[in-house]
Amino acid sequence: MTDRIIAMLDKGGSVCRERWTRAAARGVPHNGKTGAPYRGANVLLLWEAAIEEGYASNVWLTYRQAQSLGAQVRKGERGVLCAHFERRARERRGEADEALSEGSVDEEAVTPDAGARAGVLLCLPFWLFNVAQIDGLPLEVVDMGLAAPMESTRAPVERALRLLGGCNATIRHGFDQAAYLPALDEIRLPWPRQFTSAEGQCATALHELVHWTGHPGRLNRSFGRRFGDATYAFEELVAELGSAFVMGHCGLVDATVEGHAAYIDAWLRVLRGDRTAIFTAARLAEEAFAFIVAREMPALAESASGEGA
Image (cartoon, rainbow, N blue to C red; front, side):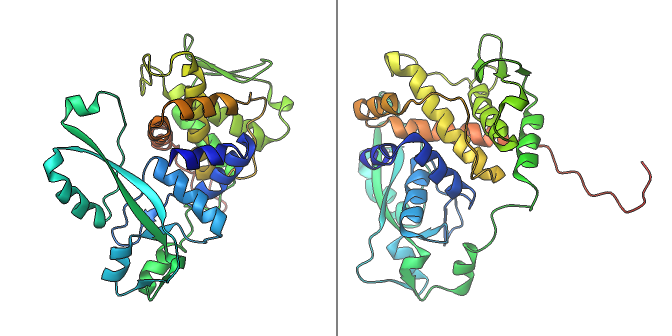
């Protein structure tokens, strides 16, 4: 799975960001039988597969789940390999496999001492098929993937501003490049007129907002000595994934994070040196995304025509 993520990044940072953001705009992949969303690195893999194959739906099922619904995966179709991490005693693996077949696919952090703390850390593989690969599905399962993921048709810039306003981060303008300064707990941006578009300004601000979530007073994101000199680059990977989730949520599918250095080479070194790093990065990005979206300001209801202030 790490090799597949590396292959995605080898296409270039701008390519990955655009692909993941466009996929995020269609919603988080979820299970067609249980309705549960998929988590962590599995989201990236399912998004990439949907884009590569041109699937219109973000609904997925295991082979057994499709059969249980009276449907059949077409002959010759290939599933997407995903991973489920679970801490439990080794002798209960059979129970874990049974639960997995029912679509329990929550991911947890992978840490070097996890097994010592809670017995054995199992990495259980499972394969998913998109509804486009399955014949005979009930109409209600097919329709799950056709519902519009956006709760409104409001402009992407408006949605981004509602996220930024809801988080109430300290944002200062007038600097030559975008950055988040943890010591001052503030986001610094160039003047709005220096951005090529309002969408680019919002995308850049949202990227820095993901960094902002890692402050000790919020999610307290820290990596100890795990990544050594690559710690900064790893945090940038978390922000890259997190901002793709957030930009997709807003519908900023064509926006670019402006004035941002490329960290592709550093990310590739981290992932090749630590085969579980992508699972940690995806989990932390998902936590940052949830933190930001939970604070989204509500949309103002349209005033009745002629109503006084």
